Image (cartoon, rainbow, N blue to C red; front, side, top):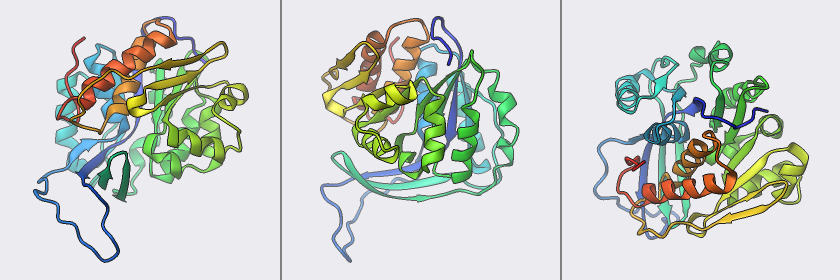
Length: 295
């Protein structure tokens, strides 16, 4: 595992998702239809890899992205990356990208994910491309072939740090792929529901076992209740920054970017957690999916 002692470039690895996200006061009953008005004309381009890369670029971090996406979104992805100063290293596959329809009530959701074309030719030679990055941030994927590919990517060089942020896709991982990535990673970013699933999947007792068995530091977000981390010397807890929530989407991705941007500059875990909650507060306090950050 690499040491985080100086600023380095970050490679975010993941898939593009076109998000159609709707807030409601309840879920529909059996055979009931709840009207959504107005319906957005176009979904938001998102997914953990793109969101984290955006915030990293806002925080003046050298950022690359290895994004699995369809050619129908090529122009929009190109524009986002150019405007943010993100280096996009993969060409698109032919067709459309993944689409997510999700109804959110408070912190719960029910969703349908429509997967894009199963054309993975752009990622076949990705290992040699990713070797050029100093820090590899592996994000989740709903595609089984991509999950397996990312598991093999985690065998980086000793000078390359690997951080793992499975996010919404953690429930899709088979135990072998999940264990393979965790074994080779320095940090694990997830919320309490996700870490609970991980420790059950790996037959562990609690989050501290991730550190003792796999030598990985779990950093666990708790929404308005802040974030905690387990290290060999401390249990660290940081409160959230008070903010009027305007957008409950993307706070976790913003936290990861804030944390990573801080720790690769040589800051400690506590300071990096504080930076993360500051960036997360800016994200959830805005009406936009991705918001410009004051440095």
